[in-house]
Structures are given as C-alpha cells and as structure tokens.
Image (tube, rainbow, N blue to C red; front, side):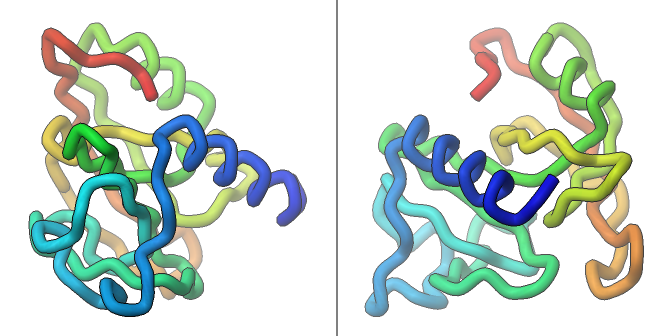
Length: 143
C-alpha cells in the first residue's frame, strides 16, 4: 500500500467522523481540554489527557474526538483483527500499529473507552505498536 492510498483512507475516515485537525491554538493541548470534532496525533494514546498535535510524526497515533465526544484511536491491524473488531461481538486481543505493514495493513478506529492497553512497545523499534484488548459495549458500532 503506497502513501497516497494510506492518506486517502485516513481522509475518508476523518470525513466519516466529521473531524478537523487541531488548530494552532489547540496544538499540544490535552484531549480532555479540546473541543469535540477534532483530530490530532500523539505518542501517548491511552490517557484521557493525551496531548494532540497538528503534525504527524514518525510512528505516532491518530486520535479522533468526534462531535458526540466519543474518542477514537486510529491505527492499523491485521485483517483477522479488523474482522473481529468490526463484528464487535466478543472480546478481542490485537496489536495496533501507527503505520501499516505487510501484516497489519487495515486501517481501523476503536473507541478508547472500549480498549485496555495490555502492553506498549516502543514505536521507534521495528514492529512497535500497542497490544490491546477490545471489549465491545452493547451499543458498539464499527466506525
């Protein structure tokens, strides 16, 4: 998958979530202080006060704070993990990566309140990402 296709998928996801980039005044603010309807990039995607930045850097994660206040973690997973997440019927453990790879090329977004960080790996190392456990809620809809 080339960079243009990846960016096209990201743009489509942003449009579907109706989010705009954080602006200059919001750059670096904690997620809890940002208005709804924005997206940004962070190295610390777990905490409710994760800082979001305008600029994507190597191996950081994209977060969408939707109009309804739902916070979504965006990243790449394997096709099997994507199918389990989309089904939303059972608990699923998976690895989420900030950038695509041959093994993890499917772009997904999952609500932060539905995932638990099991283990983080340095994103600077090859294969670095997040090991997560997804617990769908009764009202879960794949986004």
